[in-house]
Structures are given as structure tokens and as C-alpha cells.
Amino acid sequence: MRDTQWPRFQVFHQEHPDRPHTNAGAVHAPDAELALQNARDVFVRRPDCVSLWVVPADQILSLTAEEIEHTDLPPAPAGNGDSQRYLVFIKRTQVGSHEHVGAVAAASGPAALGEAVRRFGTADALVWWVVSESLIERTEAAEVGSLFGPAKDKPYRDQAFYHTTTLMRQIRGRPKQEP
Amino acid sequence: MARRPASAGSPLVDASMNEAERLEAFEARIHRGEKIEPGDWMPDEYRRQLIRMISQHAHSEIVGMLPEGAWITRAPNLRRKLVLLAKVQDEAGHGQYLYHAAETLGATREEMIEALLSGRAKYSSIFNYPSLSWADMGVIGWFVDGAAILNQTMLARCSYGPYSRANIRISAEESFHMKQGKEQVILMSQGTPLQRSMVQDAVDRWWWPTIMMFGPHDHDSPNSPVLIRWGIKTKTNDQLRQDFVNQVAPEVLELGLSLPDPSLHYDEASGNWLTGSIDWDEFWRVVKGDGPCNAERIAARRKAHADGEWVREALAAYAERQATA
Image 1 (cartoon, rainbow over the protein chains, first blue to last red):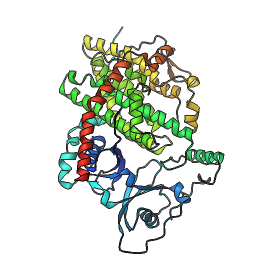
Image 2: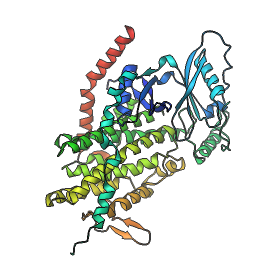
Image 3: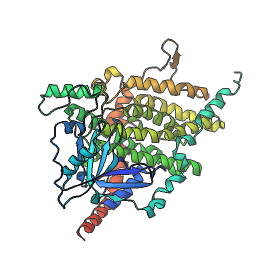
Image 4: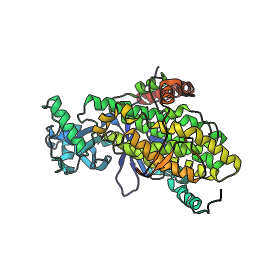
């Protein structure tokens, strides 16, 4: 069988303009543009999305709380001019997903990770992700209607659309027929 | 500096530990209700069991599109057609969530697809039964998705983070799958004599295969103890099966329909609906490849994969050209 496993992209979706981008899962795609398209199809079948980001998964630096215990974090940046912006994502609850918490400037991924832990470190952080902001592909404001609008017209994807409890109650309340 | 939560009392898994100490620390984490994440230490057997379960679950979502997909063009009206399309599309998405969860453990998509197409991989035995009438769309939704939701709601509490998160998402989306099916069964059971006989026939055909979906009895399920010890599952096959029967059997009977089990009865002492004995010969026959539709299902997947090859090639060529442009 001839096939290719396309690169994996992590997908972040935003449910409301006031909420952070949160990891929804991942898609495979040959490039970032198609990753964004696949992410729409896989993760936005329901009307709860205002923005999507995709990031090449192999460019994300990750550190779990378990690893932090046993890793020497890189020292604070020396403050040279070569730094770039890295976005920081943290998984805070056991059942939760990674949420975007902010950005740091650093000269390398490991330095960004160290800086992120120092800057955003809290007792409840369980897994850290940092990724260079330049690698993020985002949906644009002008596309929001065409990408996410169609999901709004499909109320039948919501379980509340089906009144099975009421139907069962009506049937139970009916007088029993004599045999 | 980030620290462990104060509640984390026992030692963490450490590179200097020996295998037994690592296992002890790992099991302590699970006992505390922590999620294991990619990158964390885990026993090889934990990884192996998860890859086996998650890939089978993913294959089940993908093959599960086939019995219902066959009826999309024959839906009785536009509303039912839109609902069925949306449901089958969800199953495709659920397969994607799950393949990715397995990939976080080191399985590759190619290996998993190859295992499915070659017939080596297992998937839920239920999808090797044919869907013979429109009433099957109602009964599959209520019974098969209802059974799957019980399983997936349990798996949403799984100790492995990515699988837990996939199941949270799936469970939230699938509640409409079950309810649209139940709605159809309710309406058909109160409909014309022909509708009632159609839906009764579908109930008769799907009841036992759904009961079998939960897998062998606990005493014949060699993987169960380790899956429960490591928090991959929190209920056994028989517990989930009993939950399903208790939930569905009384409501089916309230609709004036019957279930194809003369021994089925409510047991006052235990508060459970008890079934007659399950035909395990049939179950193993279907699991091992000799069900009514096994060959047809695999053939359909192979054809879909082969038919999509030119699309994959075109997309790869486009990406390559964009990258070098």
C-alpha cells in the first residue's frame, strides 16, 4: 500500500472572542492552508467557533509537569536582539485541553519554554506547549462567515432538537387499552 | 517555577528509578486521578493496550458509516436525510479524533489503515450486520449509538489524556445520534401497522447484536483486569451491558414493542433487567470475520482508499510545488 502520512497540525479553536484559543485536537494535511480547511471540517460541525489556528505539531515544544521536575530549564534570555515571539499554551486541569495564555520573546524554543514557565508558572500547570508565532496559520476575519456560518443552520446536530423525553411521557400517560 | 499540585503526594516517575519503582509511581498517579499525557513515562503494556483499543474504536467509527451511509439516498424526507448525513459525517470526524489519539502513542496512520484494509484489525462486530430497512436507521441510533455512548462516557474518564479528551468530544456530539434514532422508533411504534411491523422487525434483528457489542463476559475477557487497574476502563463489559439493558429494555416494552428474548425479565432483588443467555458462538464467528457483511465492509473500505489515491497524490504534489515555488 502506497501512502503518505502527511504532517500533523495541532488545531486551536476559539468559541467566543473573549475566550482563549483552546486545543481541539489534530489533523493531518499536506500544508497549513489545507490543515485549516480540514480543521474546519473535523472540529467545526457545530456553531461554537469564531477563529481557528493550526500549528505544525512537530514545531511545538512540550514539557509535562513530570518532565519539569527532572529538567534543568534553560537560563533566562541574555536580552540580545535575535529573539522572536513564541505563543504559550498550558493544560491546567486533568481533563482539560491546552489553552493559549500569552506570548514570550526568546532566542530559541527551549529558551521560550524556560521563559514561559518562569512567566506563567502556576501550581496548576500540567503540560506546557510553546511554538513560534510565525508558524501559526489563522483564519481571517473576512472568512469567518463562510467558514463557520453553515454550522449555524444545522440545529438538528443538537440533542435538544429531539423531544424523546416528552414523547415517552405522553405515551406513558395514555390510558392502557384493555387486552 | 511550576510545581506539582500540593495534592501530588507520591514520588513522580524519575529517570533514576528502576522498572518496578517507575510502575509504582505510574500507578500512584493513576490512583490520584491524574491523566497520563504524551511524553510521560508509561508501561509498554499500557501503551500497547491503548493502541489496540483506540485503533479498534477508530476503525469502528469509520466502518460504522457504511450501514447508515447506504440509506442516505433513500431517506423518506429531507429532514431525515439531513439528520442522517450529519450523523454519518460526525462518525467520520470521530474516526479522525481517535486515530490522532492513537498516533500520540506512536502508532502511525499508515499502520492502522493497513491493518484495517488487510482485515487484520478488529472493529465493533455490530457493523458486520446488514441494514435492511429504513426502520434500521432508528434502531441503530437508539440501540447501537446508545450502547456506544455508555462505553464512550466511561472512556471519557480514561487515564490517558488524549483518549479521554477524544471521548468527551465524541460523547457530547453523539447524544443527538441516539436521540434522533429513538425519536424515529417512538414515532414508528405509534404509526401505521406497516410502520409498527417494520420497526419491530428491526428491533428483533438488532437487539442481540447490540447486547454482544459490549464484548465477552468478564470471566472471558482477558484484558479487563489490567484495563481497570490502569484506569483505561472504569466499568467491565458486563456492567456496561447491564446498564444498557436497564436503560433501554423497559422503554422498548412501553412502546408496545417486544424484544426477542423470552427470558428477559425484571429482577426485583437486584433491580436489574436480566436477559437470557447470549449466543457467543455467533459473536465469535462475526468477530473472526464470518459475519453477514465482514467481506463487504472491508471491500468498501479498500475501494474508498483506492479511489482516493489520486486526490492524495494531487494534494501532495500541490504542497510540494508550493513549498519549492
